[in-house]
Length: 314
Image 1: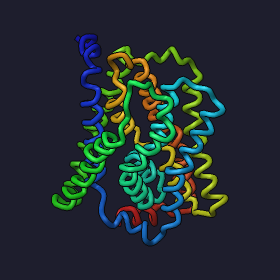
Image 2 (image 1 turned 135 degrees about the vertical axis):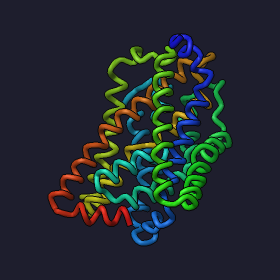
Image 3 (image 1 turned 60 degrees about the horizontal axis):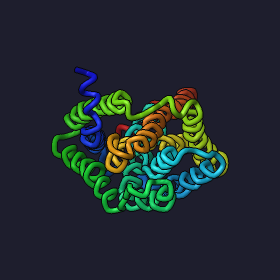
Image 4 (image 1 turned 45 degrees about the vertical axis):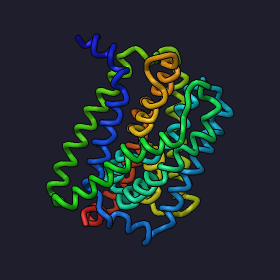
């Protein structure tokens, strides 16, 4: 029975991916408040720099990596899809647990999510189009529709519902929607790998190593550059490092499901793209845990955890 379900999974890949993203964004919106965006006005420099990291720095870093490391076209497209994505809800969670600047993380995620409506299709068109097979079209309009329907709309609806039901109920609903999104993500991962459309072994160890180094370099460059060069606080630098390296892989999976099917003539290409996205999603969880834990220990050592908790809960 399980084998039969896995064989039919490719037909439902887009449905599972969209359900997972809607639940995740709805849960995130339930606990967001307009005051989270006050950071934009009170402390604009980290916000502006964080946006520039994601809009310009990471795409250029990806171009540089592709220039020096020759990779299959489908793997290259997977990297550029990651470069085009905003930060996701997991970056907010890691920042909160690591006692980073949660307000900056949430505000930057919200800002980049809004900008992604226009920047994501632009980045993909400029950098990834030459690597995509001629019979696969990636129209900007469809990408914008996916981002609006499955990213922005659930986020706004969640924020509205959160204000209506109150803080306690909003947090409870958020917990269950996030759990639902994790279940959908598990189905997506198991279905994608178990259907046999992603040939993990065909890429050997090279692609996983490159994915790991890509995530690690992004985080080191952003975090160290923010702290030592731009002289941001440790909390802000840690936040920007986490926010830049923890991409909204859920959104990239949804877009990949729309254009690079797991069945049909381009199944192998789609499997390669999906392999990069799933692998990066897992790698970023471990890589970003390091600065989050390091900042938590630093704040604990400085005796400032109580002060941060008050800020994050106010």
